[in-house]
Structures are given as C-alpha cells and as structure tokens.
Length: 144
Image 1 (spheres, rainbow, N blue to C red):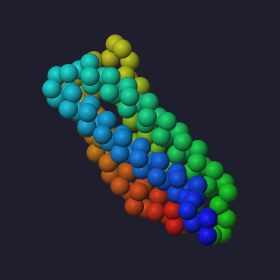
Image 2: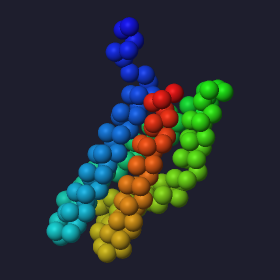
Image 3: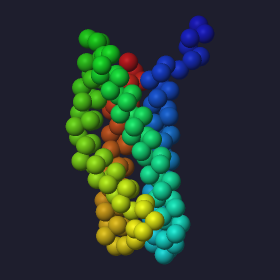
Image 4: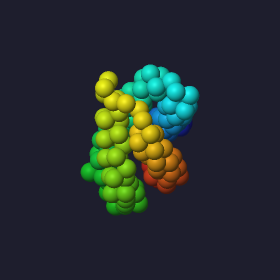
C-alpha cells in the first residue's frame, strides 16, 4: 500500500526531464526575445544559462537511457527500441546544438543574424523532439 505513494525511478526521471524541457524552452524564448529587442548582453547571458541546463539535461538523459538499455530484459524490448531510435535520430540535432552553444557562449562571440537563424532552426527541432520524447519514450518509461 505504501509503495503506491512513491514514484518509480523512471517516473522521477521523466518528471525531472519534462521539467527541464520546459525550462529549456523558456530559456530559448528569453534568448529570442532579448535578441529581437537588441539586448545582446541579456541574450548572451541567457544563452549561457541555456547551455548549462541543456548540457546537464543531455548528459543525465544519455547516462540514464544507456543504463536502461544495459539492464533491459525481455519485458523492456519496447523501451530499448525507443531508446535506440532516440539516440540515432537525435545525434545530428544534438551535435548542432552543442556546437552552437559552445560557439556563441564565448565572451568574444557576436550574436549576429547567422546565430539567430541557426538558433531558431534548432529551437524548432528541439520543440518537435521534446514532444516526441514526452509522448513516446517517456510514456513508455513510465508505463514499464
């Protein structure tokens, strides 16, 4: 009876990751708004904050999902399939995101039109990706 009051590890991870998705998207909106209003210092500062939370999120998610694939048995074939698809389909976007955050969070980097175009493309990809994760992968993790 008491166990029903406690969340499983997967449920806690999904709750945390979903919260981080929201935080990441809120930060992308703040970067965009600051840039559009020519507040480049604020945009850069927020971009650095975005880098911190995004890298932490990606690292934690990668580590935990890797552990799941290593410990999955016959009953977790669906989860392992989602995890493998997740890893394969997100590699290009993840690499582009990490590169953009690394390049434009240096003190000397200028937030120019090239930055803003690349940033907006990545934000669109992230939004789609987060919806996919939450509706598919995370749902499978919670239901397992």
